[in-house]
Length: 316
Image 1 (tube, helix red, strand yellow):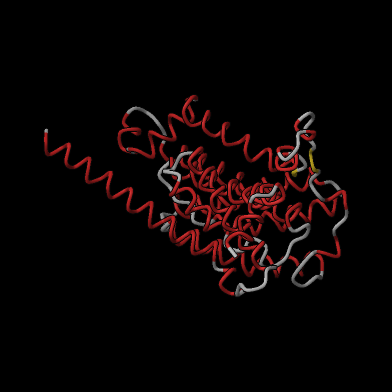
Image 2 (image 1 turned 180 degrees about the vertical axis):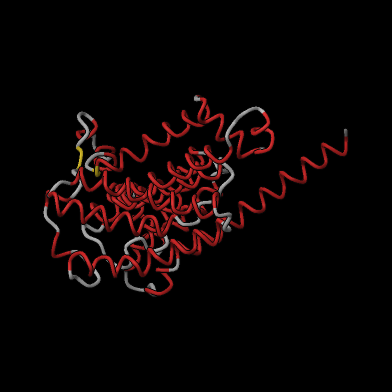
């Protein structure tokens, strides 16, 4: 059985599946990184992805353009994140409760919105046309390389955008004045305020960026991964992304590797579902079990770092 699993894992199609599955998690993980750097926890990633994925596919249908759909998903994701920001930052509502409310709206409100706008119940499969789906990109030269080309070429354009954004977010956080303000506010808001940095404005911007990144993840889910919208489309990826952000130490590159780890676990569970001798219920739990395991390992490593820091402080 082990040999069967290894022969399945060590294939180019499995590598292709990992990148395909990792993409929406990575978008949401980067969203969580940006928000967390500003000292705010965007726990509403799941709901933002649900809402943006629906409106992305609807706008793509109304305009018969995938690009308009992606832009609409980004705009909607940003607006929903701004709702969280207004409740949390201006009205002083607990941001966790605001995020939970958005997740609930994403779960139930989207079904009502779908029916209100289209008369459909549950999914948009009947609306899908080729023009609504994000195009696949074949990378010149790389596509002709055996194995490597089969893994890295032929993905949705949003997959490549996701991995490019890892570098973009890192540069934004560590090489720009905006990133400096975001990190300053997240590390010590009082100190940042004392030197003239607007804490609220910076947190609004961080949450807006977080919403836009989540919107891209939502667009990917409905306009490529599932090729339509349905009520269970996000399937916990927003929460998995929060775990990826934590496991990645709140850094873009770390979040990318953690997202790849979760992508591997999800791809493995998907492949095992079609094999005899494995319980479908047990296989379906693999991504969530890996999430818990990852958080446990993260907690242990954090505790060790805290103990080392205390030991050094006491020694001084």
